[in-house]
View 1 (cartoon, one colour):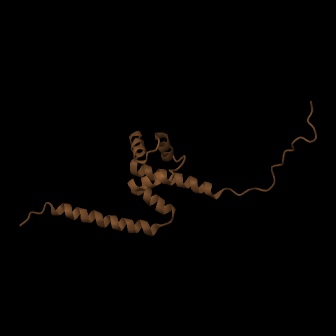
View 2: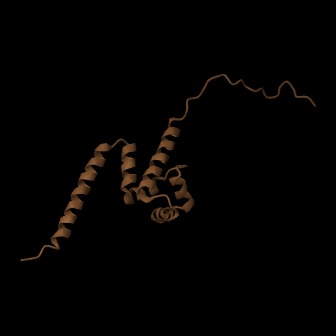
Length: 128
């Protein structure tokens, strides 16, 4: 049986090229940067994966995918990670190019830590 002349014609490869999706690069960079931040802050062992899963309520496999940069966390999980990890917060602020916010946050955090240290130190000073 032979094909008819009205059969589907295959198109040639040279023609209009569609531009690459710019969000694809951003998503890949996001996943890599968040994975690096998670590894710096939590580590990459199975105990740390379980800890991150408990914090976010995500599946162990999902957290493993985050750490291997296959994909990044969603909005709700990202907020929880930012709440528990300064490295993730810093990475998100750097991705959004909000360097001023990170510097002001670190100054505030340093002042709070200094205040806590002074209060703790005051406990050991003998009262007269």
